[in-house]
Image 1 (cartoon, each protein chain N blue to C red):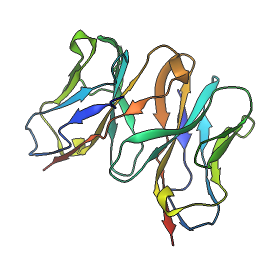
Image 2: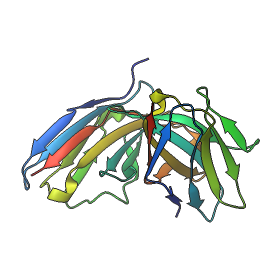
Image 3: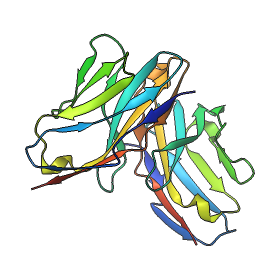
Image 4: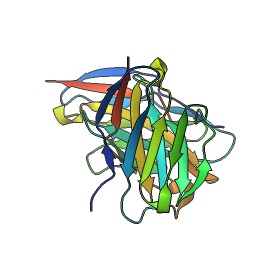
Length: 116
Length: 113
C-alpha cells in the first residue's frame, strides 16, 4: 500500500514570495491533515479536511495561508506572501475518518521550507 | 483544550541500557494517547497508542507505555535500546470529540555505542 506522498521535499524562497505544497493521501482515506513543524517543536495542526470539507482550520493564519482539497483526494497548501517565521517542515497526514479520535494518522515525509 | 508536555528535549543513552521518555498531558475530558516516532529523514509513524482497557500498551519493537490517569502521564520505556532506536519521539493526545492530535515538543533519543 502506497503511503502519503508529498512534494516538493525541499523549497527555498525569499520572503514575500508565494509557495505551494502538494499532498496525495493514502487511497480511501477520508480525512487529511496539514501540520506545521517548526524546528525544535512538535507538529501543530493547521487544517483538517473530511473528504473535501474543512473540519478545523482554527490554527490556520488565513491572511496568508490557504488550503484546498478538491474532489476529496489530493490537497494543496499555499502560503502567500511568505514570512521568515514560516520556515518549517510542513507535514501532511491522512486517516480513514471512521474512528474519530482513536484513529492512527499516517504521515508523509514532509516538505522542508526555508524562507530567506 | 488539551496540552502535552515532554519533559526532556534530549536523552542520550548507551546501547543496551534502559530508557524512559516522560510525557504528561492536560485535558478536561477523556483522552486517547499516542506515541509517534520520527527516524532521521523520515515521516512520523505510530509507535503505540492507548485507547481503553489495560493501561500498559506495547509496541512490536520492545517499547511500552503506561497510562496513569491520576498522574496524567503516559511515559514510554524500553528496557534495552539499540542503535536503531535513535530518533525523535513525540507524545500526542486526541479526544472522542474529534481526531485532531495535539503533540508535545518531542524528545530526541541518541543511542551511543
